Length: 117
Image (cartoon, rainbow, N blue to C red; front, side, top):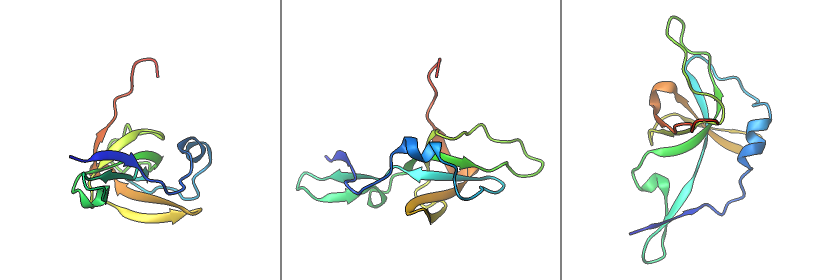
């Protein structure tokens, strides 16, 4: 049994990331995601990073590309909470913040928006 804690590393607030203009433009069917890194603690007190658990990763959409020519565009938008494949995408750093760039097809789930939001 493990319990879930958030990382104690200094990370920018999500609201500030969503308000500022992203320095790069996502191309074609790419999506820029701010990963929600979480750490699990085992019964013995060991910190286990999410990447070592073999589970898909969670994150928040920061930028969405226009889509591939001749294919319908995505319904993803900035601020969506998503789950994407663990080994999907490329890690990048911009303004001292780490992001993951994945294809739209690598996104497994999107959190449903509640009515009125």
